[in-house]
Length: 238
Image: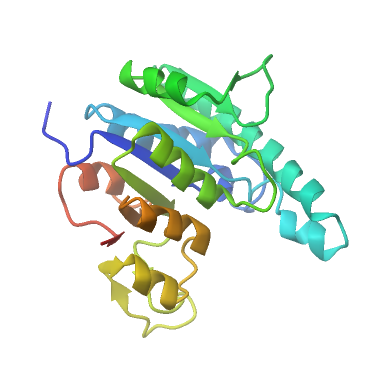
């Protein structure tokens, strides 16, 4: 087995990773593609924790914009992340990976409650741990949940997997002259307001010196290549 740069990773994905061409719902084929990517990383010997969003099922801000109470909208989003977590668990199990879903909102009939030491133990045994339900609190994004869980389980890196291959100084889809950034300090990432991750999550990583790598989930085994030591995406660190 090859030497890898990070032994334990926390993978943060948006819910859109599970969606089909429409951008909504859960597409079993897309879930299988995500599971294949994770299996390729797991097969290197990495311990893999995952936090997944819910943008394919529910966006709380849309509810708030229509007058919904913020806490209600956010709790609906937390429940939607658990739906994504269960779909991903099913896809991973069919790939032969032992997987556990843990939730910040207790649903004991379908998943374990999130318990830090139990999550660490699962990782040590080679199980993929999907941590659903966000932080369990409204007003916090799943980016912040990813940063928090990464710190709690002792991950060596927080990988933000997106549909863009790196962080740019502007939106590359609207500005063809946007500059690709290979490395950033936490402070620069906050000051430039680049919006690849919310400021609370970046600040939490900065305070605990946890590196963040932003990369394209769908591009040429990017996560696997990162673990093998290649320069991939954008690294945000000290």
